[in-house]
Each structure stands twice: as C-alpha cells, then as structure tokens.
Amino acid sequence: MPRIMIKGGVWRNTEDEILKAAVMKYGKNQWSRIASLLHRKSAKQCKARWYEWLDPSIKKTEWSREEDEKLLHLAKLMPTQWRTIAPIIGRTAAQCLERYEYLLDQAQKKEEGDDMGDDPRKLKPGEIDPNPETKPARPDPKDMDEDELEMLSEARARLANTQGKKAKRKAREKQLEEARRLAALQKRRELSAAGISVPMRKKKKRGVDYNSEIPFEKKPASGFYDTSEEVVDPMAPDFSRLRQQHLDGELHSEKEERDRRKDKQKLKQRKENDVPQAMLQGDQPARKRSKLVLPEPQVTDQELQQVVKLGRASEVARESAGDAGAATDALLAHYALTPAPATALRTPAAHHDRVLMEAQNVMALTHVDTPLKGGLNTPLHEPDFSGALPNSQAVATPNTVLATPFRSSRSEVSTPSSFATPGQGQGQTGLLTPGLRDKLSINPEDRLSAGDTPAEHRQQQKQLKSSVRSALLSLPAPKNDYEIVVPEQESDEPMETSRHSDIEDQAEADERILREQQERRGAAWLRAAAGGERSHPRRRHAVGAAAGRGAAQERDDKKRAVQLQAAHLAYLEQHPYEEFTAEELATARRQLEKEMEVVKTGMNHGELSIECCSCQVRTDTLVLI
Image 1 (cartoon, rainbow, N blue to C red):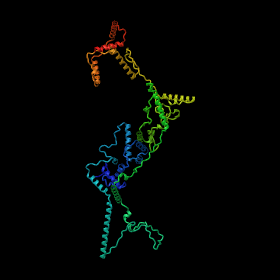
Image 2 (image 1 turned 30 degrees about the vertical axis):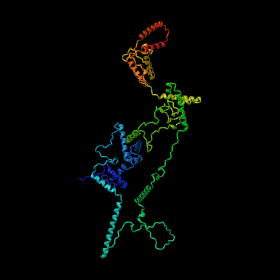
Image 3 (image 1 turned 135 degrees about the vertical axis):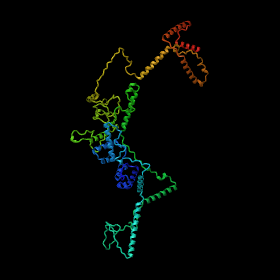
C-alpha cells in the first residue's frame, strides 16, 4: 500500500521563514504558488497561517479587562459571529474564540469551586492540535531531514531569482525562435532554386496583430491639404531619433551610481579643505522644539493667598496654646501635614467583577431551555443590551481643587455631592470638604453660619435635631443578650481591689518609681552612721592613696583623678557603709547629747552651732588620717 501524505501539522520555524519570504515576493493573492514551496502545507493552511499568526498587524499582547468586557458584550449581542467581532476588538477571530472559551471555563470553575489553575483545553500527550496555525512555530532541529533540506534548498533557489533571470530566459527563447525562422526561410529558398515552389501560408490570429497593424486606424482621404495654419512645437521630441533608454528613463542603478560618485567627490573635497564636520552640517537643529503649552490654572492667586492666611492663623493659635498643657495638645490637631484618611476613599472600589458577571450571563443565555416550558426568563446579572459597547462603570476620583475652599452650609447643598465626606449618617445632604479642617467636629458649619433672623435660627435648630435623630436611627439595634454564670463555691475572702481602677499613665508611673527610689535611698542614708550622714570622711587603713598630689605633675592630673576615683569605688566595695536600726541610732544620739553636755560644761564652750562643730570634727579627723 503506498504511503499517503496528509498535509498539515505543526508549523516549523523554517516553514514560517519560507512563507514570509514568499509573501514578500508573490504577494497575498497567489497562495497556490506559495504553497508549492512548502511540501507539507496546502494553500488554505498557508493563508490561515499568515492571517492568524505571521501578519505583523496581529496583536499578541495580554488581554486587558476592557477587551474582555467588550468581547463578552459583543458575544452576547452577536453569538458565533467572530469574523464580525474580531475587527471591533482589534484581534483575530481565532484569538477572540479562544479567549471567549477561556473566560467561560474560568467562570464555570469559580461556580463549581474547582482549581482555577488547571486548563481543560490544554492538549494532553498524544493529542493532535486542531488549530496549529494559531500556535507558535516549533524550533528547527539540529539535524534536519532530507525532505526538509531539499525543500529549503528549492525554496532558496526559487526565491533568490530576483536578478532578471526571467528576462534572460525570454531573450533566449526569442533567439531560438529567430533561428527557426531563418532556417525555414533558407529551406524555402533552396526549394525554389530547385524548381519547387512552396506557397506561403499565413497563420490566422485571433484578434489584432499589433506588430503589423494599427488598431482602430482611420486612413485620411487621398488628396492635397493646406499646412500653412499648422503650429509646430520646436520642443516636441523627435521620435525618429529616440531610443529605448530615452523612453524608459534613468535606471535606479545609474542614479545610485551617480549619487555615489557625488558623495565620493564631496568627501574628497572635505578632506582636502580640512573642514570640520560640525561646520558643514550647519547651525540649524535637526528638529525644532515645539512650544510648551500648559493648561489654565484651576486655582487662582486669591485662593492660594487665602489658604496661606488660614495656615498662618492656625499656626499662631497652636503656638499661643502650646504652653497650656497636655490636654490642649490633645485637643488641637496638628495641621502641618495632611492626616491619613480615617474614612473610606473618595474613589470607590469595584464591588463586583464585571468580566465574571458577563461570562456568567453568557453561560446562562447559552444553557436556556425551550420556551415551550414557560416560566420566568433566565435571571441575569445587570443585563445591558443598550449598545454595541459595554457601559463604562469606572468612577473617576473627584477633583477637590475645583471645589470652593471656604466653608459652605449644608442648607446650600440640596443633593449629595461627589465631594461629600463618606461615613455621614443617613438623611444628611452632601457636604463639601471645608477649607478650615475641624478634626474633633467642635465647630460645625451650621453653628458658625447662624441665621440672622429668629426664623432662620429656628429652622437651623430643626435641621440640627433632624440630623441628630437620623444619626441615632442609623445606629445598630442594641443586643441585650446577657449570660450569668453562678460560681460553684463562693469564697468568703474579700477580693483584693487594685489601688487604681483605671490604667496608670506612664509619666505618673515613672514619677512614682523615682519617688520610691528616693525614699529608699533616704531611709538607707538615715540608717547609716551619723558621720556619713553629715558627709564626714571615714578612717581608712590604706594610707597614702591621696597623698602626694602636690608633687604630681600637671600632665598626670587627669590620669591620677581617674585612678583615685577607681580606688575610691574599690574601697567602697570592700568597706561598705554600716547600717544601723532606728533604735540603735536613737540610743547613740541620746548618748552623744549627754556627752556634748559634759564637754560644754567642762570646757566652757557654750552654745556652738552644728556648722562650727562639723568643721572642727572634720579637721580633727583629717589630722588623724
């Protein structure tokens, strides 16, 4: 059984390159001639490959959300009309169909809760691609088959015939025809010389012989004509002296050769004259700069000055109240920087995925039962059949600069504005963002812009009451569900209550800790000896640690001071202060008072102050040391 060759299959890189070169030479109408260069592809497959993949105008980027919405909307309006939908979207029909099926599969997976990463339309091993024209080309193998090498060499030879070989072949055929005519003429002459006459037979041609006849010729009547009134153009070409090159004009190769000679001559002159390149190019720039056109400002100078004045006034008020304390700092907000938005954003986010909703609508319309059953129509998510393009649901961020920077009363705005601060209670009208920010809402606009007449004041009070009432109505319903758990065994011991019912401030805690430390240090100091309490020096066994400072040199003063400090700390660690109880201190103090009375009486000191006594004791102690 002979081998049957079916054309088709995956496209290779070699076949794509041959197809592109053939389209450049033969155009996009001779697909049969182009397919003759590709042994494994037909003319229809070559055409599909060009219009579905190789055409430079094909858009192969990722699909955007707008394109998906447009595709689903047009598929809902014109089902299965992909050739009509493709030019509207700017993609090919195969791309639109593939993307449409992909979106439907994703919507169905989301409804069923399957894995979104698995693609059911992906080819499994061993399956044949039904649309290989829309897939990337397979790279060429390192060792190509003989059939592919033969096809490549044949295509290279046919596509490289661009140097007038056809004209040479025509000239050669014409020369052979002339040789045959001369041979026939010589044969006829030889026969006539031999006495054999051969009649000339003319070939009948269908149509007009343009070589021997003049088509549509009108012969003038015989006779003489007056030529005195004829006007002769002296610039008219003399057709008797014209040649073929005069009619054809200058060839492209001759023009390039002439320009090449001119460039060589200019380069030679430039080198001889040694002129810089920048001077030959001229001072004019290659491209003129376009005029800078800016839009008109949206904020006037008066508004900017007003904003500056308001900022200065707020800074002055803050500086004047800065020394009042922590409470004033908490109430006065800092307006130097724009605070972070505590409420919702001005540009609302998308509440639902429109691409998914459109895909679900298309699926619902596809799986519609017969209308003979009756019942309700198929439920859809916001169906839109108003036009050829889907409605744009994007909400732009409002331009707050266009709003007036001054305060405006709520009564002036009858409808909710796009600049309204979100999070307001129900029933309130829109409110423009005020120029004076009030973070704590202490001074609302309604109170600042009070009415001049009692009627306006009463109307304003009614509006305030209605706004408060609507705000209270918008609060959630209270939940009075309480669960009481009775302990199994009640303890008779009273629960210890904390000293402070609320959370203690950090500053107060630090102050309390510092005060406790000072009290402990004071108590320890009181428990020490009386000499240490009066800062009297203690007797030490190590003698000579501080002696001889007068003999030290000036450059060693700092080092000796450090050494003395280290020695003092080391001595304190080895000989700490002795601590005494309060009873021992009181007993020692009474004995000291008795001794002091005896000394006063015996030595007639009289009443001495504690300072004099301390100086005398310190002097005696130093003498002992």
